[in-house]
Image (cartoon, rainbow, N blue to C red; front, side, top):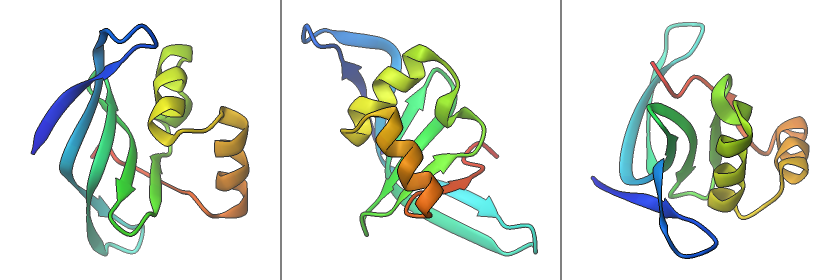
Length: 102
């Protein structure tokens, strides 16, 4: 697992905004099935926000994906899209909302 700070538009490292490569998350579905997902994780402070899987699938945390303006700014950078584009993909089912913080 390798952790690096996100970088601002000025090229400076941003405190408390991280990309974690090879992150693994355990998710338990409502029916009790355990799933493990591995990929590149965007983490804001101590909260997992978004996970890019090797398959290209995007998982977003159901609570924290749109937690604050700062989180949103760096989530957009991580996903390379706007909040509106992200919301459209959530609504269409392309992006899945799950609990990434258990």
